[in-house]
Image 1 (cartoon, helix red, strand yellow):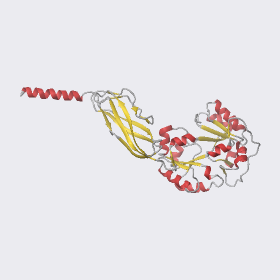
Image 2: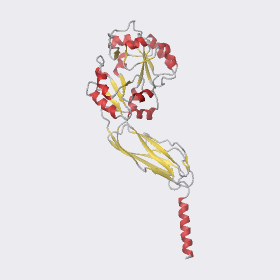
Image 3: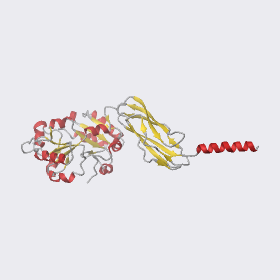
Image 4: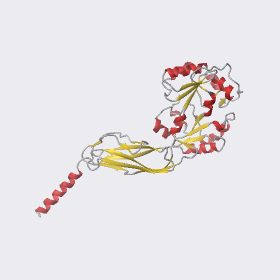
Length: 350
């Protein structure tokens, strides 16, 4: 009897010893993201818990099975009973029409599994013609700056342009995003060229002036993409076009001309939006589109964005069916831009 008790205690002690130390528990064991449109940046969230009785130490950052996946650890040590979220990002670009399985490998001092494999699975459907990713918007994104006076700007300006008078441009250097394309224009091109040179000297390599300013634009394209104030008769700007360095031809900009429609609530728009974006409701989109009679609709890229991408895609489909074949919604909405680029080019009101 005593021998049996002794053997049982020995086995119990061995079992408890096997449970001692750190132990990594992952929930879920497999992350299934369902079906997404190509271009979405999938966010797979795993909860990592130390279910052992000793500190769980991660020996390094996780590795992945694909360069399209990243999974940074927020902490490198978990005390017994502690948990944290590991967010793995999978870029679905180029995987349209495929079932995919990606793996995240987590390394720790868990003696039962020093390398834990976390699968991420799902189906990536082809994006619809009216859908595009936040990275596609970023690729062609530019800021358009009107350097004239507020009075001149109010009479008529290029669609999507923001007004920063030439004399105030240096006050905006800390706010303008370096690395993004910035186009500038004035009435004739002289100040535009000076402004482009100023920005380049301050570390904005992608700054360029519209050749000839608005006068040069008018000579080449008339009043295409110019928004006039009510009651103002379209007329060419006064002055002779000036063609200096650091310029972009009007035709080149017109070939990829874009405007952003932001369908989020006014409060969200005021908290941070793209420069020159137009804040509308879904119901206001048709009237806005019909109020652009002088714009070459076939050439205009219209990006429609909301918080999650649902309402924006409805607007993009309507626009494509009503004379704007280049209208597209941002898959996943503003959230996808923030996940990829943070607050880049998102400005608060005021």
